[in-house]
Length: 418
Picture 1 (cartoon, one colour):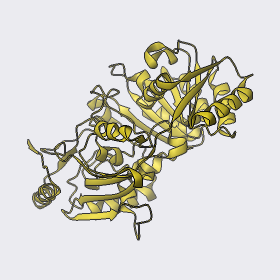
Picture 2 (cartoon, one colour; picture 1 turned 135 degrees about the vertical axis):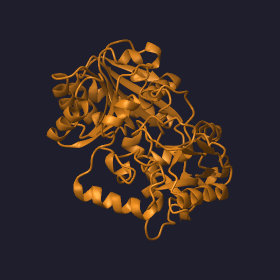
Picture 3 (cartoon, helix red, strand yellow; picture 1 turned 90 degrees about the horizontal axis):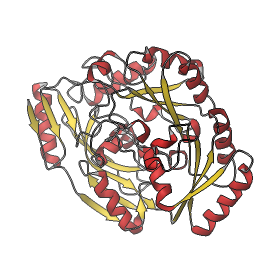
Picture 4 (cartoon, one colour; picture 1 turned 120 degrees about the vertical axis):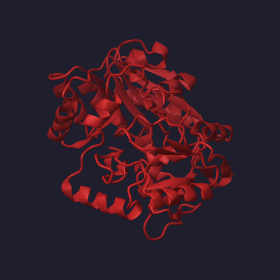
């Protein structure tokens, strides 16, 4: 097995040109924090982008940052924090959930997997903040899309096409993102001891108010004890995050208390304690316990997800918690449950959505469709897209669907925020 570790865009280009000429499949790798997502790859060669690092442009006044694709997200987020700024889409760190170290994700991987976090309700995902890219297709051709300003896209927006493609269409070498000021103040209002249906109703009421809630999640009984080092206790917690300038946050928090005063006991959590809670929700900390139980990520209508989970619990042993006002359900199941067929059948029955297997053994991932199967017309379109960008199927072959030549449309289409 050969590992190529280029340190320049030119070296990435020459490596892929070699792979295309030799028809030699390549595993595309940053630091490997998301290596366990998708079908197992059987490739003899690895293209390791961990040396392709460095911030190449940062203009805080212009709210723009460019970096090489292998630059660690943790390094960039530290730089942004020093300047009072952030990635508003709050990219998740899959490392701990998949048994790895935290802080190993890269900026290129954030776009390739279209990362987002609890703030997706308000800020969207990585695809909504990308301004431009440089990349190399599976044909061995370098191309660029977008630029360093928001209104700089004509024709096809290939930057967004790369979002959620999981390295199956092209290899990113440089990315440019829009950044935003970080909130001055953050407060979390927790409603305690609600059942799932009441929690979904409370979150819908809060999101429909003028309080400008930026995140809403529900941790059922016992799940709540698995975040923030257990400081929330074991009672169910329905969490609402309010961010902004200090006086505005105080006013909006009080308005929420008035609105939700009869829903249940209220608890106000501020500062670093609030940030820790949302960081743990973002990174799926309740299931990042080092265990091997399969973990699923299900995106569907907020009003239906808890009904689907209740129906699922009638037939399988399931732990669950909810983000995105209930529209994102994280599920932990047993490997011997008939999970994929059962789960996806119930998702379709309750209005449709997308279920992705994000943690499982290699043998389990090889036996199941990890990403949501597409209907025939979309599958045909995906195959044509793959053929245009990677006709010899050398980039992460089979990661998103069985067969070296199979591919699916970028997964940015599967997780539209509710």
